[in-house]
Image (cartoon, each protein chain N blue to C red):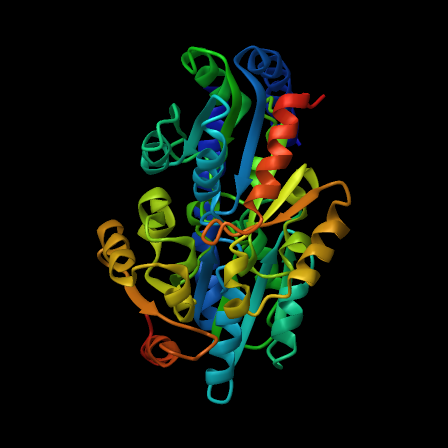
Amino acid sequence: MQRVSLLTDVRRTNDEIAAENHALLRSVAKLTINLMSAPGAGKTTVLESTILRLAQQYRLAVIEGDLQTSIDSERILALGVPAHQITTGTVCHLDARMVRKAITEFPRQRVDLLFIENVGNLVCPAEFNLGEDVRVMVYSVVEGVEKPKKYPLMFYKADAVLLNKIDLIPYAGVQLAELRKNVIEVNPRAVIFPISCRTGEGVEAWTQWLTERITGGVA
Amino acid sequence: MQRVSLLTDVRRTNDEIAAENHALLRSVAKLTINLMSAPGAGKTTVLESTILRLAQQYRLAVIEGDLQTSIDSERILALGVPAHQITTGTVCHLDARMVRKAITEFPRQRVDLLFIENVGNLVCPAEFNLGEDVRVMVYSVVEGVEKPKKYPLMFYKADAVLLNKIDLIPYAGVQLAELRKNVIEVNPRAVIFPISCRTGEGVEAWTQWLTERITGGVA
């Protein structure tokens, strides 16, 4: 019982810090996105595709959360976009405290769009508010159609779900219609974008949705 | 500081229960395997392929760990193999206490091979011993070549790594040699099996390795 109450307290504190982060983030970026997915679903590749389409018009920045290595930050930096690394060690998700520390260190000038790329994990990141404006989830269609039912929380919390790697559908034996149905069943609010970063299919619709939210404000 | 020491205590208790489980599991199964992976890497499909090859010769059973739903247990039961469901709710991994409870309830007669299919998560399951004899990890090659460096713990702890979905290599742009190299760099002890449950490629080598461990004992 004591353990439960302590965890509850830790949770509450995260939400308090997240609420403060939200105000701080608004002074740092017009729009902040918490980008979540299982490992290997393609978060960093989605960022690369998005950056290539938006970097000429908008000021972008990325906070990268990883257990180990700065491989992802280096991929972002290679595109000329500022990236700040949070190395979580053994912690399987970002929390509001880590993001708070990152905000105070980075970025130094205001940007239009700040991505926070969470640790690759389909479970725990969804439990921790970071203070973001929008939660976006990347899901690899190769992971199968039934995952929204098996891992409902992240699907439920996402404002937008990118169904990535649709170029592999013919080889992976996945029914896109069934996957969409399962996503909608868990979360009727979510906007769904089937995309392929390899072929570019669907990326325009996603970046269009993003730019509307940068220019129009979200709340 | 208090939080750390409490967590350490929780860890120690898990290891204590896991040690007791190990003795209990030996009375239940000749060989117990803790099967871990990220969501959608193909754990249940690997189980199906393995069952189809081994069920005639060996008595098998499966303990299924899932956040929600009994979709996976139903797939195993459909093959005529006893399956016991552990529903973890919001807990993103199995722990020794959950497995202990499952052992007391299931299976009723001794089997040759017991699989414990962990919750789909590339991070936390690797931190919790369940009392298993052998740890096997399934990794989908579609998730990319750099994940062993980014999520080293599970790769490090695995006795065998199944590199699954190799039939998608031509379409996913993944270099198998580079992936193997990255696995070995993190864990030179691991046996690596490139497999495709779709085409059956490599499955024979994996089940051969398994049967040697059933008949020969592990420890």
